[in-house]
Image (cartoon, rainbow, N blue to C red; front, side):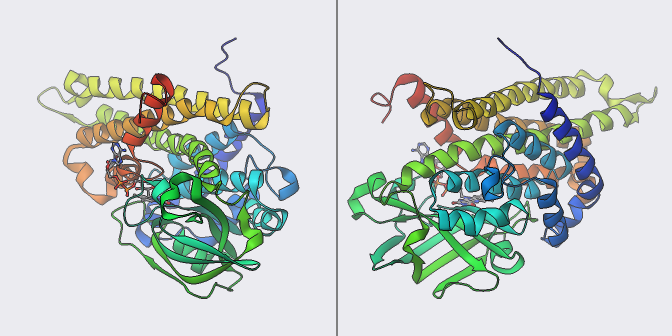
Length: 410
Ligand SMILES: Cc1cc2nc3c(=O)[nH]c(=O)nc-3n(C[C@H](O)[C@H](O)[C@H](O)COP(=O)(O)OP(=O)(O)OC[C@H]3O[C@@H](n4cnc5c(N)ncnc54)[C@H](O)[C@@H]3O)c2cc1C
C-alpha cells in the first residue's frame, strides 16, 4: 500500500525540531556563516534535543530512532540554516555513528557513541585524498599492524569537522579509510578505523591538521589531516581487516540520503524566499508584482514541482533504509538501498541548484548582496553539486550499475 503520511511520532518530532530550530538556529544562521563557527552551546542543546545519533541504538547513547526521523531532522536543520553547515554537522553525526554502531568494537562504540548522542562528540568520515575523492578503492593512506597497534601514514583532504574535532568539542573523530592490503589490492585491501583525533585535549602524536579556505558553508570547517606514524589501537579497527571498503560504501549510501534531505531543506527555504519576493516586488505603470510575468512565475512553478519530486525520492530512500536497517525486513539487503540513495542524492542536489539559482534570478541584483542571504544558501548547497559525499557522476554510475547490471557497467 502506498502511504505518503508520516507516523504520529514522526509528525510530533518534526514539530518539536521546528520549534527548537526556529528559536535557536534561524535567528543566527547568517552570523554562524560570517563567524565560521557553530556556537558550542547550540551543538550541546541540539544534542540534548536528540538531533544526533538518531538511528543509533539507545544502549550506545543514541536515540533508538529511524532514518525517516533523521531525514526530517536534517531537512529542518537545513531549512533553518540554508547555508547547510549545521545540516552537514547533523547528517554526518547520524550516518557515520550508525556505521560504527553496526561494525565497531564495543570499546570504540562505548568511547564514541554516547558522546555523539549527547552532543559532546562528533564522528564523521575521512576518506578523500589529494589524488582524487571518487576513487575510494585507490586509497593510499597506509595502516600497518605492529603488535596491538596500527601505524598510519598518509594524507586526507576536504574533511568536514576538522576544527570542531580538534579545537571545539570534547571528543571527536572520523571513520578513517586506510589501505592495509597491497597497493594492487584495490577495494579488497581497505580497512576502516574509528579514529579519534581529540579526546578531551589528548591528540595522537604525528597528527597534523589545517583548515581550508572554502567559499561557503563556513559554519562547519573543511580541512586536511596529515598522518606521520600515527598510532591507532587495534581495537579501533572497524569490523574485519580489509573489509573497510564495504562498510564505507554502506556509510556513504546512508549518508547520501541525509545529504539529499539537507538539499531539500535548503531548497524549500529558497523557494519560499523566491515566492515572497515575487509577490512583493512591484513596478511598471500598474505597480504589478513581478510574479505576474510568466518569465518569473513559471520558473518558480517548475522549482516547486522539482522540489516535490526530490522530496518524495528522499523520503522513499529513508523509508527503504528503515526497512533494511531498523525493521530488518527479511529478504532485503543493504545493496537494495543503492538505487534509492543515489537517486535521492542526484535529484535533490540538482534540485537545490535549480531552486536556489531560480531564487537568485527572481531576486535580481538583490541576490548579489550578502544581506538577502540567497547567495549564502546557493554557495552552501553548491558543495554537494561539486562533490561532497560523492560526485554527481558517481551517483549516475551507481544507478546505471544497479539498473543495467554490474557486469555491463565497468
Ligand atoms: C565542502 C566539502 C566537504 C567535504 N567533506 C568531506 C568529508 O567530510 N570527508 C571526506 O572524505 N570527503 C569530503 N569531501 C570530499 C568529497 O567526498 C569529494 O569531493 C568527492 O568524493 C569527489 O572527489 P573529488 O572532489 O576529489 O573529485 P574527483 O574524484 O577528482 O572528480 C572530479 C570530477 O570527475 C568526475 N569523475 C570522477 N570519476 C568519474 C567516473 N568514474 N566517471 C565519471 N566521472 C567521474 C567527477 O564526477 C567530478 O566531476 C568534501 C568535499 C567538499 C566540497
